[in-house]
Length: 104
Image (tube, rainbow, N blue to C red; front, top):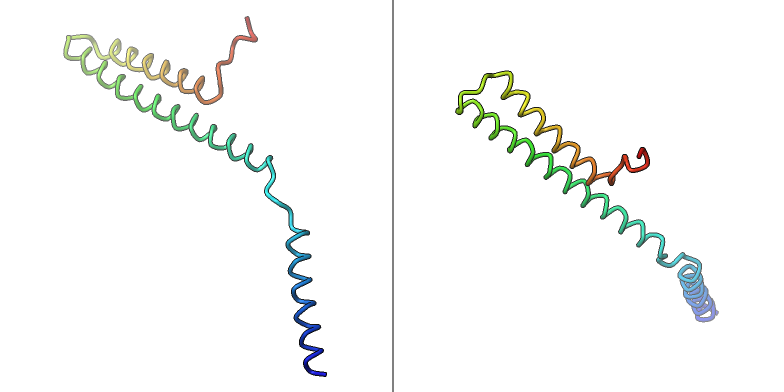
């Protein structure tokens, strides 16, 4: 009798494991598409961050060149500000896509 009980228990465990595998959801396409979209957003953020950083470096260099050329402090500061704002705009377009076309 012990043998029959053990065999029945073993069979029921195998059947439960097989049922659990069949019931569990498989990998879907939506997860893969979501992962691709997430990766694209990461790449856009990284590109935008690099653009802003490069704009900061360019602005510092331009301000230093302006000061070395004998420009006054206010004009050099405005030049630096314009360069940084242009870099921010480019980064924003890279991150979110170009906007303003609907306004035209």
